[in-house]
Image 1 (tube, helix red, strand yellow):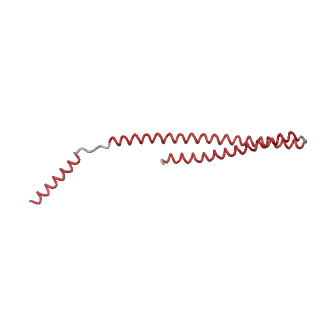
Image 2 (cartoon, one colour):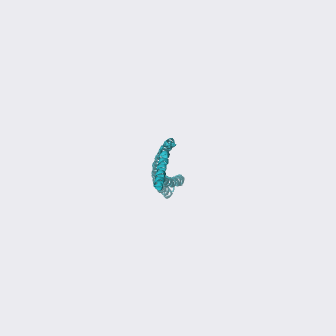
Image 3 (cartoon, one colour):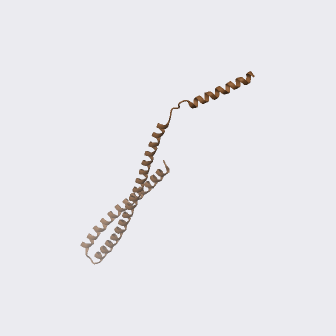
Length: 140
């Protein structure tokens, strides 16, 4: 009887202690959770802006690349036309016009090389922006 009375008292006290613990005022994490939630929303907005900026950069780089490719094609056609004219001038023994055409050819070559470098840089930027966009979408 004593033993069962002791067990009953022990169970009563432990249940009373656990009830007192749960009923006691607990410091609330609600303000810090709200702060964290606001910060998460800000981070999400920043991430969206970053992704949209990367998309904009990618579109611009593709536009630049296409424009440079059109310039390259135009310069090649112009270069070939100037070579034909120069060769025709040499054939007709008009060396003054041939010199003018040669200067034009040299100018077109410089322009063509410049456009090729620009196209290469644009392709490099496209690769970089694609990688950055993929990284941003992944969630860092």
